[in-house]
Length: 162
Image 1: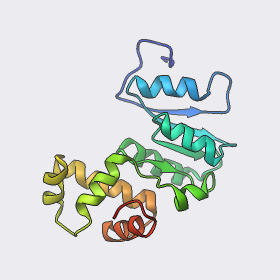
Image 2: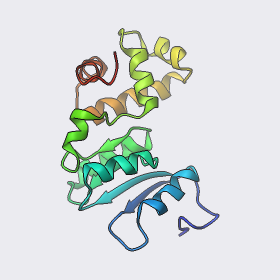
Image 3: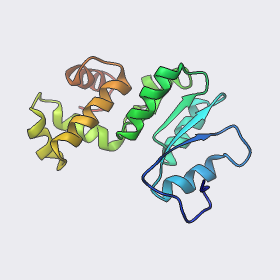
Image 4: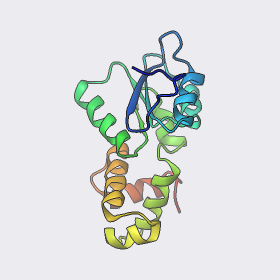
């Protein structure tokens, strides 16, 4: 299996990296993300500050090692689809003060904020309708809401979009 220092790192994978093992640190993760890899970090001791640092390094998410397996699987699927996933038990204040959504997700959510159909939203953000639908689905999962209209309401309420 290739490592972060290998020239064989591929972008067709989702790396699940244990932050708490030797050689796991933020620099190794940054190397993976700079190489174009999708990375989700597992940690037993992540803090809000560390989570923000990891997000700035380009990870798709930070999850607790103690997450139930079904929640972990759903979070990994959402990360693969492009969503940013943060375990609320690791960094609950990120849900309040800093949005867990990527710029890409926020752009799609802004484009969908007037209730336009998927096809029109896709044209606005220059994505395929299926990609747009997947991004919106990831946003809904990340925010724990029932639909994109609720996602827009949450994002507005928390000041992530106007």
